[in-house]
Image (tube, rainbow, N blue to C red; front, side, top):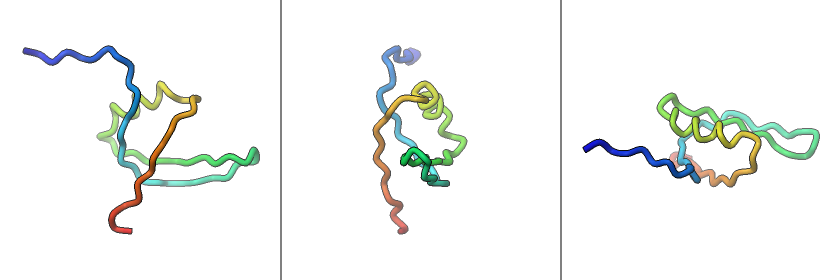
Length: 65
């Protein structure tokens, strides 16, 4: 039996990424740049749908720090 694709909207994604850059902006906000590996294509597709929206995030420190 084939697995059916869910049609419910994605509410969360989990990614691993390199923290590449943090910039302070003139409007007193910060822009954060994350570098995701190529195997995160499905997560990136979900994130593209959320561009321009406010999202929540939790960043976990690496074990080797």
